[in-house]
Image (tube, rainbow, N blue to C red; front, side):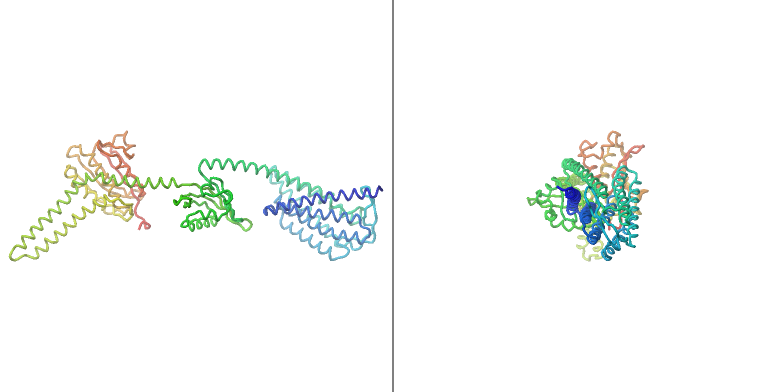
Length: 619
């Protein structure tokens, strides 16, 4: 085989292999960008690789050109892939290093665009005004075509400026990245920035030397650009390897997180606004009763939610997307059975940007059992409160009999008097009118006594309304006065007319104060007659709340019992149930208040019921 043919085959094979390798890299990274549109670095590298392939192809054509016109035409077409090579490179630096000056980037692109336009507007090409002759010189053991006599274009200074700006941009970007100080930044600056800068320096000097005919060599961009191409490929491959390791670590972390979340009965989920798909852990899918095949469909998740809760859930999710704040909500889902289940959800949204779709991430937990427990606990509290009121019935019976005996006795006496007046020959109608008025008044008194007892024994939920503090105390005193009188106990009501109103359920508050008053009467029951005193009052505290007090002159609470006195089923009475004070404290806390006890140094105990004052919203 002749030597020239062997050399020609050698050049063609080398350049073809370089072009094929670059083409394969471009296809791989272009495919990665198609699958992940946010991988812009892969897109810019694909542009660089495809353009590099075109440059290598035009170089082979130029080295085998047979006429000056053909050589000039190959050089003209070489500007097209060269434009993509330079533009792709500066965009790659901008995306990968992230420190380039944008104004300089766009200046370089604008200048290269101008050169490309002039290249196809002025014959034979941008670099030469005329190409008179070519010659063949040995290159890699073969004769290749180079320019012999030609006139360099007067516009070539634009190429010098473009090369200088490109070199400055690369150097500035690499230095800025280096100055960030961390090891990763310096490595990227050295590998990528250094590799591209070496190419710009070598290719720029070499190309200008050929164009100005300082040397007789073919125009070659492919060999020097192998340096930055390999550097870019190495860094992207290193990133891919790191991403692969990170993906493995993430999968392992995901398994651990799912295990931990499953142990806590929590389901993790994420909604992607771009695809409207849902990712969820197995626990979350099990809560909604979805399979692995249907769990990605957002509409399938929404279809599981109770129709009455869907508008509220969508509204809260929209508010989360708008504000970016964490949102917590509870809603019902429809299972296979007719009974709905309750789910508690908590999530946070990434506020959408023009270049990024919205995402919402959060956790789910089935709280059906907790809901049932809460309902049962609420019902139990109502039962206990009802039992507490019924337990007072025996103590209230004597008070009720005494209270009713007075108005009923008065009604009887007035009725007898009215009968006597009517039996007279000339009835005094004015006296009859007064008697009827007294009967009506006494009837209202008796009816009020019955109503107070009936409301105390009625089982119903709390009804919040404005309540005057002094009227509560007056009602309690009226209920216990007869019992206190029979037990020779002095009941004192301190003045409290100027206090603000509180917001609460009148019946339940009377129940609390009545229970405290009865406990106080029991506490002084064994004291000497002159020391049987119970005092009720109310005042405004420094923080603006209303504080009711029930004080007795009994022996007080032993220190060892003080901490247990409000616990359920703890009592100091031989016949006590131990639920009265526990229920009273529950009612006080349900009203936003508190119930405390204090033993006085001089003897006796004072119990304080503190309630917040009524606000405008309470109206």
